[in-house]
Length: 206
Ligand code: URA
Image (cartoon, rainbow, N blue to C red; front, side):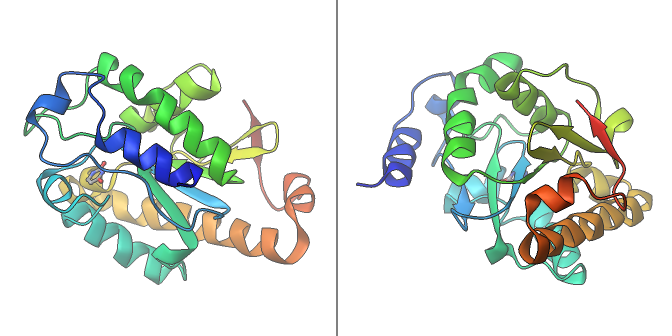
């Protein structure tokens, strides 16, 4: 079994927190394991809990539509979650759930080695800050910024569910993914070091 297979096996059998007792299926990350862009959501919803894949419900449909409009295919990304088991309906994961799953996110970051990480929503920002050890903030403050931590770029976004609740936010959500698509193209044609020193991008050191 390769390292991804091993990770997914452990996630599928995980009993690290109480959510494991009510889940149907835990949800592993999915997509291009060598992707330069990693997108991080919150936790599986009802559909993901049934299917066992991330972002296959309404939030996933919105994400796919926006990605497509920005010229990004889901196959170009690695998509994962902060918490791998569905919380009760209407509840956000608690900090102990984020902590219980944090080693899975750390291992995915080490395996995929993305250049751009897109934490969507407060839970994903908190999970990433726990793994990368930076001071966390709220999505309302961080949304739209391109944060630089070493050779990693972090582009915090609202969660697609927040866009579904408030469609006025979609324009900014799309603009952020357009920036991310631009960065992805620049990485392909000029390499990461050029991107990190590009004057076209306003990078904020984290
Ligand atoms: N919302 C998330 O944060 N993740 C999913 O996989 C689905 C919905």
